[in-house]
Image (cartoon, rainbow, N blue to C red):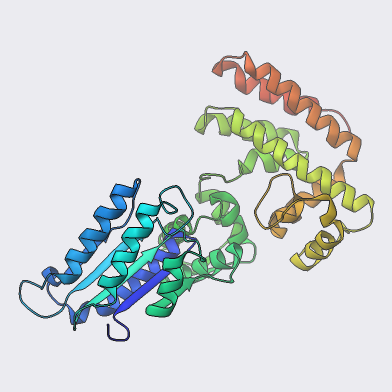
Length: 367
């Protein structure tokens, strides 16, 4: 195999991996001008039999000459079995990959092969072989998810001739659960909405135009409750039920936020957080090192561990932590439990009333 004929792009974010692999694919298209000299193989496997079929298709694509002569460009896309899943760890998959090495080590002159895979186990023997035998790129290796998300948003904004105002990227991350694929699409949508009249995407614009997706917080109602504004909270609950029709995710969001606010309140009472100062990553990391004995591994986001949260998101909760004392916040949790018990036997028509009564019990009395 000549140097540079095999390209391997791996990572933990499927969108970023595919985006990078497509950049490589597009950069090579000029050398393979006709469609019959290009082939894309779907690398997604649900069973070991799928792995064997996929790698056979790849071998056939690599070894078959282009109809009009010349080389071929083959992209083995979205491989999902280079990890420790049931399929990835099976002996059948390992045997098929060993056979595939022989094909990839003898790529014909003029051919190029791209392999993109996500997620991967970096100690997988085939991944280690790729590191030595290909133009290997580990997308976002050493880059935390937050940094990768911000880089993706910045690239998308630059492509569409816009920029994000302070706080707007954090608002976007909170509303879409920091999903990089959605971030690109939402940035394009926001840029189109501005239409050249302005080039700045503000925090308010994101709040108004970007819907909540996936694991994103139910932002307005939760924000309103945390602010202590009863009228806003009641209006936001109405809007929530107009769109979502379900109380469970809203109640879960309120409980999740309140758990974090209780932890923030404890840190304020201990003097480790100043509610008048901006909460940043350095401050949070310093406290985390001191308090790590009370928490398990903080490498992954955990709703019960304040030190795994985005500092900007926590910063928005600090005013609520400063507003209410610990006893009041624990009372909120008790009221959430009471509302949950009421919802168990309630019809969907009764759910908005139960949630409004919850808000009134918590926020309707004086502080």
